[in-house]
Image (tube, rainbow, N blue to C red; front, side):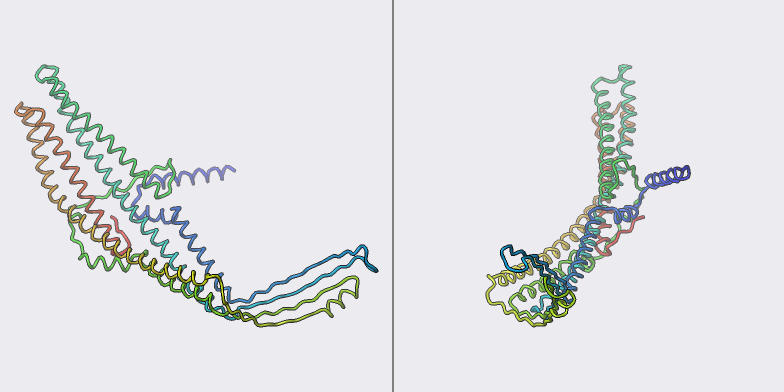
Amino acid sequence: MNKRILLCVVTIAGLSVAQARDWSYNDCIEYARQHNISLQQSRISGELSEYTLEESKAQWQPTLDFATSHTLSNTPWGYGNKNSYNSNYGLNAGWTVWNGGERENTIKRNKLQTQISSLNTEDMFRSLETDMLSVYMNILYAKESIAIYEEAVKLSEAPADRARQRMESRRMSRVDYAQLQAQYEQDRYSLVNAQGTYETRLMELKRLLELGIDTEISLQAIEWTAQEVLAEVPPIEESYQLALATDSRLKANKLEEESSDYDIKIAKAGAMPRISLNAGISTGYFAPGNNFGEQIKRSVSESIGLTLSLPILDGKRTKMAVARANAQRINAQLDTESRLNDIAQQIESCYIDLRAAQSRYTAGEEQVKSAELSNELVNEQFNLGLVNTIELLTAHNNLLEARHSLLQAKYMAILEHKMIEFYRTSSVTMP
């Protein structure tokens, strides 16, 4: 018993260590692959389509059933034996020889549906990967934002302290002190907001991973260089063609078009003649009468037959089924065209956003350098009494805004780089 308790403690400790580790992007993807509920449900849908395919293949097999009936009769005002017993036993077999091609086309259609289910699961996982990528980047961005606001708090705290001392020694007005103290409090408030945003982004990640509310999670830090941010990308047309070749939803839509062709053939089979073969063997027993074995032997009856069914009127069921199948075919074609447009827009949007982010990043680097120099000079001048409080606060806020804009541009560019990589290769590489 003590050994079992020790094993449980060790296991729980191991799980705690596993949850406490820093997660990489690949860790998140692999964990979500196994634990995401929507993904698991999609896999189950794929299994159900496999069962449907097996069921349609079984339509080639003959049917065989055993039937028996037992009847007890009573004739209270009859002559002789007033009670009688009658039983029948029979084996019946049937096989559809031809049903207008419905059976064959159903099997072909269901084969396509199993492939479509598999592609739908793959597409759901692809969507999960892109959602995970966006959330992952947002977490890293939020974490670096915290560092910026922490630095801002430090930068505004020192002037506020000096201002308090100068006010107390009557070398600064209460108005100027209040402005500097307000800036310090504003930076602290911004820091709290940044920390709240970071926690919210972590919550989004835990939701994607299906982790519990009490699970602690942190991400591995990644350092992005300017070369990575400003890296060139392949031609947009090449990326578009690769995206078409790797997109699971587009493949599924094209298979839906083929599937709808078989639906049309299945619907048209309703107007075709049907041929079926049936056979049976039966016997019975009646009491009172001869002994059971003798009656069973003498009552054996065998039959075999061929049935031809020619539909004449079916209340427009076949006509409406064909019309619905044709409409579904058109809808499948429109889905394919819509997906082609979506991919083109997504690729173009990535390239536009990437170029804009890279331009902002390049400008932002110079803006940060200028803002840092300006803030340093203004602080020195303020200490010498050469500039007023407004100029000091303006320089401080300009530096904060420049750093924040540079950070936004960096992560926007990296995100778009990774999205383009994903569209081209169906995978994302992370440091």
